[in-house]
Length: 91
Image (cartoon, rainbow, N blue to C red; front, side, top):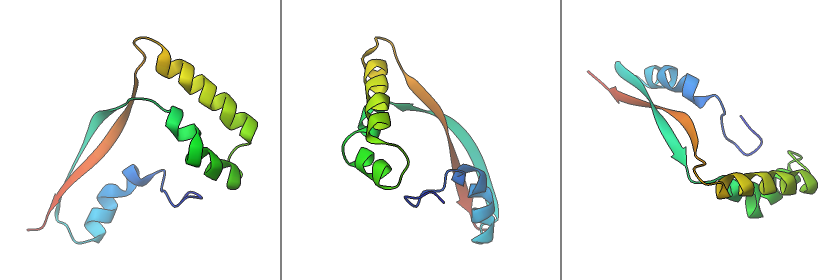
């Protein structure tokens, strides 16, 4: 669990959680996920929360925001990550 309640390794746990919940058939897949930009994640309320929980200083968040802003404004920039999904059924 993270400070804000997320589970950073949830993708690795999905199949086990589904089986614990009584699902017999678990099909796991992965897909690329695109993100339009990260600047909103390090500014405004998310930045305030990060500072509040000691995850970064105001100076660090400002530097990260500037870096992401430059990335977001770079022609052809694209941030892609892998997302895992499961499809479950009961017999």
